[in-house]
Structures are given as C-alpha cells and as structure tokens.
Image (cartoon, rainbow over all chains, first blue to last red):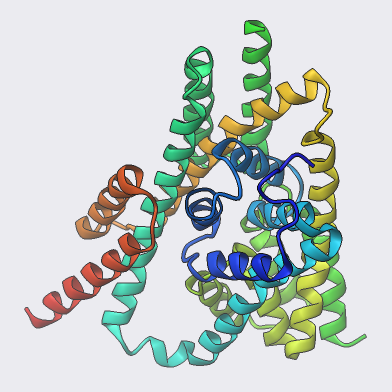
Length: 184
Length: 177
C-alpha cells in the first residue's frame, strides 16, 4: 500500500500513537486522529488522511476504526492492524468501565457536568476545525479548488441536515467523481 | 446460550450492518438488547451516555454493553466481533484503492473521496455542536471560538481543556449568584 511514512513502523509506535489519540478523543476521535497522525507525527499527509477517512466511511463500521486498521496494516500487516485497533479501543474501554461504575455519583457534581459539556462543545469546535484544515490543504491545487470546496460544503450541509452518512458519502463521491471527470 | 454469548454473536452482525457509522445503529442495538431483556432501558441509556463521555472511539458503547451484560470476557469478545470483520473490509478496500500501481480511474475515485470526507468531518463537528450546545450562549460561544482558534492555530488539546475550564467556572458563577 502506498503510505510511505507509515510502512515499517514498530508495534510500539503503533500502540503509542493510537492509544494517545484515543485517550485525547473526547466527543469523537476523528479530530484527534488528524491532529496526531497528520500534524504532530507526520505519518499521513492531509490527502492520505482524507482518502483513508473516506474509505473508512464507505466501508461498514466506524470511520476512524477502519482508518486505524488500514494504518496498522500498512505498517506491520495483520498483526499491526490488531495492535493498532487494540491500542485505539482497550485503554478507552478501561476508562469507560471505570466511569460506568462512578456514573451514579457523578450526577452530584454540577461543576464537573458543566465542564464535561463544555469539553464536548470544545470537541465539536475542534472537529469542525479538523474538517476545515483538511479542506484547506486539499484545496491548495488551484485547478481543483472550486470543485473540492463545492463537494465539501455540500457534504457538510447534508450531514448537518441529518441525512444518513452513507447517503452523504454516496452523493458526495458521485458528484465529486462526475465533476472531476468533466474537467479531465 | 447465555446472554453474554448471544450478545457477542449479535455483535458480528451489528458491525457489518453499521453502514454509515456506528451511531446510526444505536436504536437497533437498543431494541435488540432491551427487547431480549439483557439490559433494562435505563441501564442501556446509562451505558451509552458513559461511552460518549469517555474519551475514545464512538463504538465504545458496544463493548461497554458487553461488560454490563456479562463482564470483561464478553466485553472483549463483543468488541472483536464488532470490529474485526469491518476492519478486514477496510483493509481489502484500501488495498485496491491505495495500490501503488492503481489505474487512473481508481486514482480519480480516490481523489473524489477526499473532499467528501473533509466535508463530513466538518458537518459532524457542527452536528455535535448543535447536539451539545443547547441554547446556552456560553456553549455556542465555546463551539465557535474553539473552531476558529483550532482552524487558525491547529487542533491541539489545550483548546478543549480551556473550554472545560470556562464551562466549569461559568457554572460555579451561576451557582454563586
């Protein structure tokens, strides 16, 4: 597979990177996946990240989980995929199990609940920013700028309008493919 | 068959049927779990809430339900059953789409997918913001300010920590008043 900065990464690196991005991922891990894999560690370019996330979206399952499996596989084959998936899910699962045991007591601390909600609002902002930064990077090619922006804005609007993600992906990719074909 | 084993087997199908994301199948998973009497409606709701609060991928509610039904082994089996078949599908798809010697048509398809993914990510952030920032101006302000700062300066964790601090201080201020 054509992910040059990923191939040959060690199991230890896979475990570190994917547990790191999962434990930072309040309110969804996609934004942290981009921040860690693209900006901090340089494992993926923005284009590779967006392509992998899109593939992960079209295939059944969670988009970031699918992206994780592919990156782990590109690094170390099937064992790499399993290590990356375990790192993404198991530390978070341990925290969630601990939280579930505390869930009843948590209701007694209004400041903690307000902080948690504000963190989720922050997570929403960071997710928006991840999409915009990816888009900005994709749109650097002058000839494709208008097409890419139109497709991205339409896809975002459909998601906000509550259209199921698979339908958004299908419509978006069909339109994007059609527009790219006309230009070619 | 014990509820734990029955649930772990059902997760095979939950994973494959999670087309368009794992949040899309929450109602289906709920109807199976509550309908089979494995968890009460209240317990299921608590599990989903906790899974959303905990850091990590959205599918956390699947193994967490397994844990609530029958403990750690079922949590791990349900997680594996849910994600391994879809991971295999993603790897096979990526092997075709990301092949070094891909045909021009595949390369075009790949570049058609990327802007859609960027748009879906942006839209998902806006949708999350609309779900959590309910009518309180401070919540809405946090979403907008963090989005602007993170777009400009990079999406680091410190904006989220700052948001949490602002939210906590604002709530304390209201209690004091």
